[in-house]
Length: 281
Image (cartoon, rainbow, N blue to C red):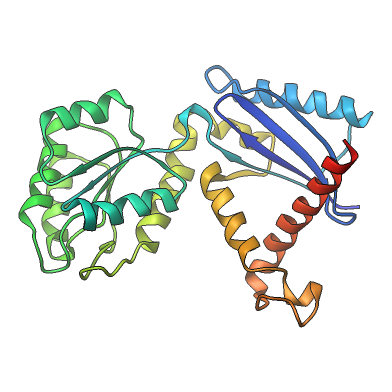
């Protein structure tokens, strides 16, 4: 028997699902109020106690992994040049990284925009604008506006690459927490979002989880791996490809990919187990 404990640290509830990956069945589920404002481990232990009560005994898990949207999840502000182009590209990057786009700004930032970023307690700002070799004035204006505001919020720059040196110089001058990535729209209507998306996820895992008090739960479990929206997105992407051919036969509707098979198997196992659980209740 191979037992996995899957956890979603939500803003309101901490939800636990124990899975037997060999029989592809749900062992039990439980939840308790999330206590990220005080100590996130308290809510987790309350839910775990309820889970053991339903099972009838304490059991050992082979792996315990979780995702999190606690403390408001990953809140981002997207800044671009034109609504329909670089701003839209920036918003897609944020959403692809599992973030909530709390604020979106086009053209030049204003003092009111900066105040909104502060009031909303934004976790990460994505600054984009201009194709490579295109407009540079706007992104440089916005970079300096952010710098002069004294914001300590991490900034991911993913705009016109010809401005990268000047962007870096401003960041160093003002001591900004800035990360420079490839342009999300290097050419008109050409999107390249992977580098910026991965950097946002890296910042979330290293900085945001710890700042929100979620890091301490990793003493109790293996790791918090993803923001909840990105975890759901990845599961949907895997399910959309169909069953892994190696496990379910050569006539499977998707091509077998070795690097995705393990995660796909667990997603499919969970779906199958969830269906059985619903049928029983």
